[in-house]
Length: 211
Image (cartoon, rainbow, N blue to C red):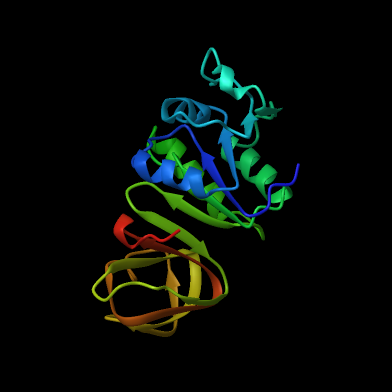
């Protein structure tokens, strides 16, 4: 199956901004649920294109409108449902994956999901939504398009070298490690982030999120 374009991935954690999730569902080229994430789809009145996982947390019964939904069963116990779903999304050629429901639902699940995202190799751009939005960015130059005064944070995943201009606290080929450096910055003008090595999370609030 080829997806292409952008994909909305629903997990079984807390869905903190359902209105935003529904808006992303309208923009996405496909909706993919990681097993129990299908419950959120049912609650929001969305129809998944694909459900991936061991199918032990599906809503019962599934809505009649899901007649064309594809179910990809994977009973492996060595990988999380998020890992399985991201493997599918990557193989299907998606360029961007918005991921909702990755947070909450138990601290252990939250930590596993973040670790799974940070361990990914080349593939789609990954954006976690829920109480704001966080994009995982690798080497490259990124004009951030933030309005003046907008709050944002850069968090190493787990180590990176970056340059940041147009912000209250700039960086010049600064090495970032996992910790508080980069937390709570502000846009002072045209903010441009250049990641020289490694990867960083760019976290913004919902008002500054443009997808």
